[in-house]
Image 1: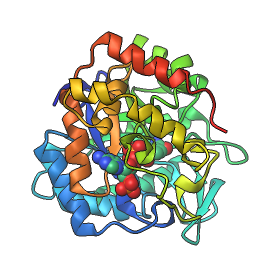
Image 2: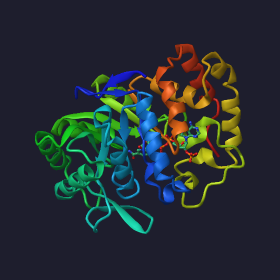
Image 3: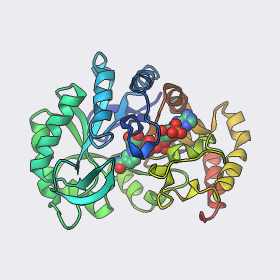
Image 4: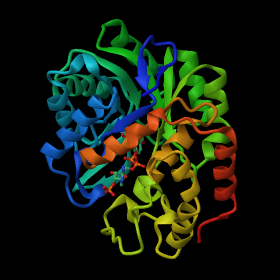
Length: 333
Ligand SMILES: NC(=O)c1ccc[n+]([C@@H]2O[C@H](COP(=O)([O-])OP(=O)(O)OC[C@H]3O[C@@H](n4cnc5c(N)ncnc54)[C@H](OP(=O)(O)O)[C@@H]3O)[C@@H](O)[C@H]2O)c1
């Protein structure tokens, strides 16, 4: 496993991080993962050198954080715990964002709700400090909080020793710049995969220039790029993978193009003696500006597989060829 700095925080985190959205269960993810298996997955990650573990309160309304807390109880020093604030479901403060599992989740980064969230997260995680505390989504109309108010609250938490470093997620470049102007931001988390490369236009070059860590998410396109989602895999209507606005490549009409693309990389998986999932994670980790790649895992075997990508360094011509192959795909239907 390779390790890279989380910006200027002094924290070194594994290039492959474990994402625990699926660990929270709920309608987003279809069949609920067994908690014991989720704990095995977290232990397998730590055993494989993955120290970066990303969670959030809204992943299962506290459940993902509780499972992470249980898993690291005796191994706290081995983990870089990254969680988030700013998606709020306890009352009607904030701007409505989505409905799931009978709850309305709102975007809310008001200092008074964040002060509640931090205590809840510390309790659920069973720790007295969070290594990386990230705003999950920036606030939006109608309940907009000035970025400097949110940052001032985060800086207070840092001064109080409750968090070691501050990160943001899902921000525009303008919002990121304002966050940096108002406080010490060390990282940005956003969607990025070989299929979803929008961040290359602005966010990635900016983060690279300013030595910010980048935590990419959905880099396996929620399993599609592992090659294990065939034509027969069916997702329930409530699952995120059925939302073809986010994931147009999951449509049955588009899947054959992805499966053909992946089949065309057989010579590369042979060359690196790796699986498709490992090849894709290695590609992501090799892109300019990318420092950390979050990989979700429903089971231990999945993170054991993806963690091994943390040791694979692709030759530049391989990385270029993969990019060209994906560009040749064109747009999904
Ligand atoms: N900040 C944000 O707004 C945000 C948004 C999204 C995600 N995230 C973070 O980023 C993390 C990663 O994103 P993600 O979990 O959505 O997507 P992902 O990592 O692209 O995909 C994870 C899913 O892919 C499948 N998978 C993973 N490894 C596999 C393997 N080796 N073989 C076969 N299938 C495999 C599993 O699904 P199945 O077993 O069900 O097939 C798994 O749940 C999240 O867990 C979360 O921590 C953050």
